[in-house]
Image (cartoon, rainbow, N blue to C red):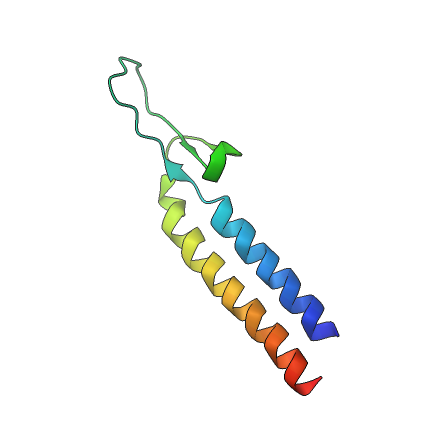
Length: 80
């Protein structure tokens, strides 16, 4: 039971890391001065300018956490 709970928690954190990763905001035809920030998937979180570099690490870590959580849940059923 404990492995299933840990696996579910790790999977949930991984999914949140993938969903909230900053996506680059492309502005075309705007005469607005200054750098632009990024938004997460579906624009739930606004990331300030200069935080876009976190996109790739958050994606990699999120996918790794999802896979690890699924392995924990699978092994819990097999050995539980």
